[in-house]
Amino acid sequence: MRLAYLASSQAQLVTIARPHISALSALTRETVDLTVWTGEGVLVVGQVLTSRPLRPVASVGRLFTDFANSHSKIFLAFMPEHKRTEALARLQPRATPYTIVDPQRLRKELEKVGGGRCRL
Image (tube, rainbow, N blue to C red; front, side):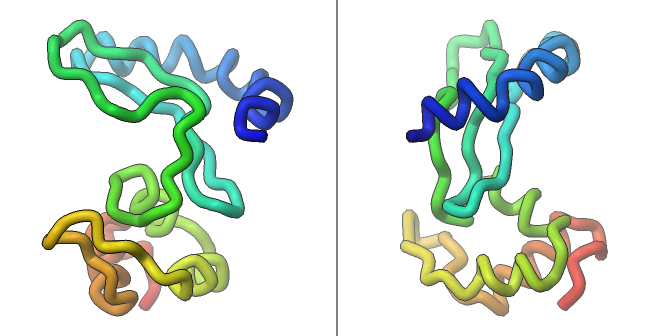
């Protein structure tokens, strides 16, 4: 299902974004992921890998259903309040002892991520 989504609906986005994410990767010497928000979470639709030896574990087609990652936090911080509230109502798994699973604490974290744009 994810691969079909990638192939059909995101092909043009990836084509248009490729030069930009390639330039960003060259500038930062880091891996750059292109992600989209889906009803299930954040889907990686494009990627430019770093030349450095340490590589990320995410790959194209990976779906992040949790909020313990930068991809999800960025989308949540900038999405409309009603969609954020709906997303935060989903129970979150604790990936590590530092995973924020409390919705109110996560809202405060999103306020930092969004530079004040996330309304509480």
